[in-house]
Image 1: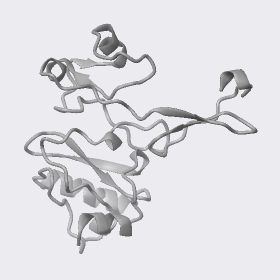
Image 2: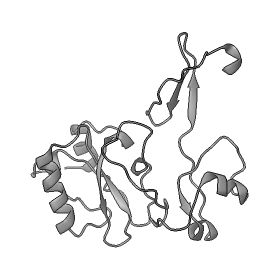
Image 3: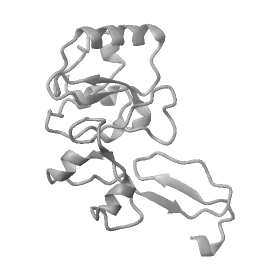
Image 4: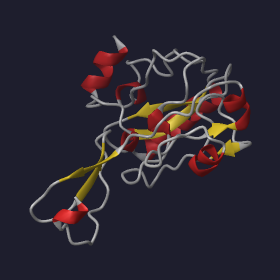
Length: 186
């Protein structure tokens, strides 16, 4: 079964960060790869998943589960990723929607947690010109090797008659701020 068709069958039509239930680490590149599910997994499925992750020698682009297995019918993963692909954007913690599963910041290119540069440091080094956008984590080694910091999805303002609503371009939404949406703010 094609991975995209299997994902759609599970209700995963977009690779949303709020649908990441677990990650599995590639044995070759050490990058975490996301496992998606529309609904949270029950304790039995989670236990089986953790056992499989511990026993399997997962490599980017391969299926962790067969669709004949129960957990394989509950989870979807991107099989088009290679070891050269950056960490999936969905790996990084969304503002809401996934409190039960939090991921540590890693360099989007090499998956190290060492020498990470935040957006403020990238601006200080002159690697980001615009003041409004944020970037995914990048380590100093990858930056020095010429890899470009990747932009986070932009926050958009939407006009509403009752309140100002900020929403992420990747279909996530933030809590409505408690401010007066007067025309001079929009």
